[in-house]
Image (cartoon, rainbow, N blue to C red; front, top):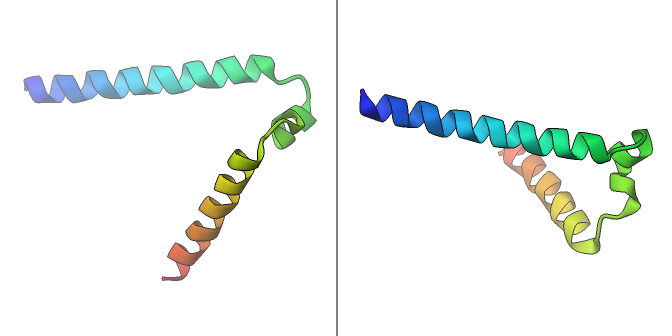
Length: 63
C-alpha cells in the first residue's frame, strides 16, 4: 500500500511540475509566431537535436 502512495505522490509532483512549466512559457508567449517558431531564438543545438529526434522517430516507426 505504501508503494502505491509513493507512486501516486511522484506522479502528482511530476504533473504539477509539467503544468508549471507550461504556464510559465504560456505567459512568455506573445503571439503565434513566438509559439510556432520559438520566438526565432532557438540555437543550432536545439534545432539539430529536434531534427534528429524527428528523424529517429520516423525510422523507428518503419521498423
